[in-house]
Amino acid sequence: MAKNKEPQTDVEQKLKTKYDRKMEERKKQEIKDKRKTRIMQVGAIVIGVGIIAAIAGSIVISAVDKHNAINSPYVTIGSYEITEPEYNYYYSATVNNYVSTYSPILSYIGLDTSVDFDEQQYSENLTWKDLFDQMTVEQIKQTKALLDDAAAHEFTHDTTEEYANILSSFSSSAESQSLSLSDFYTTSYGPYATEKRLEPYIKDNILAEAYYNELLSQNVPTDQEIKDYYAEHTQEYDKVDYKSFIVKADIAEDATDEDIERAMLEAKKKADAMMEARQAGEDFKALALENAAEEDKETYQDTETDATLNEGRVYSGIVSTISGWLFDEGRAEGDITVLEDTTDHQYYVVEFINRYYDDATDSTISDTISAERVAQYITGLEESYTVTDNKGELKYLTVDLSAETTEDAATAEDTTTVEDATEADTAE
Image 1 (cartoon, rainbow, N blue to C red):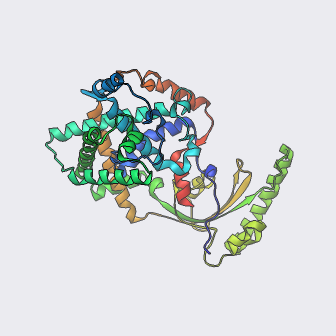
Image 2: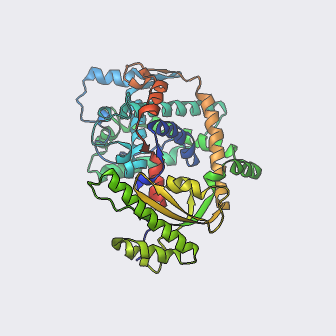
Image 3: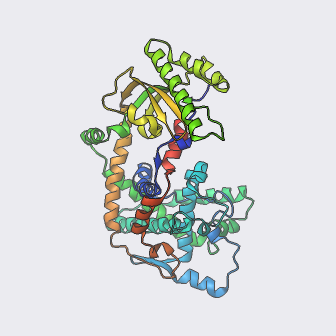
């Protein structure tokens, strides 16, 4: 039975402050996701009944409330008066796209989908609902800007087939959740949602997505531009092969500071001895087996795999304790070291094998350049699309986000980013 590479927990991944997380969250939305498709999945389906508690379909609605919701603006974006049903559609799709993307690691980012989002703090002054409201408004703004630009450039796209596929997926999802199609719409997209009301919103998204992809195709870089971009981002795109082994300090739960210090010294001696033995010519895997705890020996005894060997790893997918050393420009084949991890009270014995660039990554860089160019273009389009909170429900608009993130940067405790956690899963 094949074994995994040497175990690494998510918390061993590169730590970031909450301020960094927020800044990188926006960057990921604008760049990384655009390598695939920046426009949200137009057929985003609620992955669990009741997940969007803020727009649950069980609310009793009066005729007056319904008339006002359907006919009066909930928020105005540019020249567009967005009604509550349209806003709910975008909000629901935005949340579900986010939740489905990060579902394996929601606990790491502090989101509980069983609790109302407005009862969970994303930061000191923002709830998760505030964050999703902000993301929703940005999504609507971008969609409308793309639609206007598409019209200005006489871009057309037949939405028939894609729309039919989305309706089919809705039917399948409703059946799987034992809901009528009508109940599925209201449960998933709010109390005013019907197939007829959602149709123009869905088709708008299909058209906007098609136009976005057209913009990407118009902004494909040349081979030389790809080479130049790589030259400026070698650490991001290079890969390394290396061997590693963790020597953990033997620390009891009630250990004193002196006990911990002694245990770390013993672990350091063990790690140093292993490094010296390797430098003398002994086999790295054999040394790992010799130094492994009893419960881990089976992992290193496996003859089909080498649990100490890590191949094709990128900088962001390697624990921060050792990534800097591995990607040092002066690193050479056969270099070996012992690196201390004070957070988890352990030492890494690390041997560098190779650093290289995979030509297949050219396509990734090409997608990134295209996405960055289109993101910049769309940002320019969006500048004239001001936001007016007609119903006074978008609380994030009243918060000084720049002041908040500055305060978070100074006071918030370190936490892993969404990207770190997903990359940790992939790496292992």
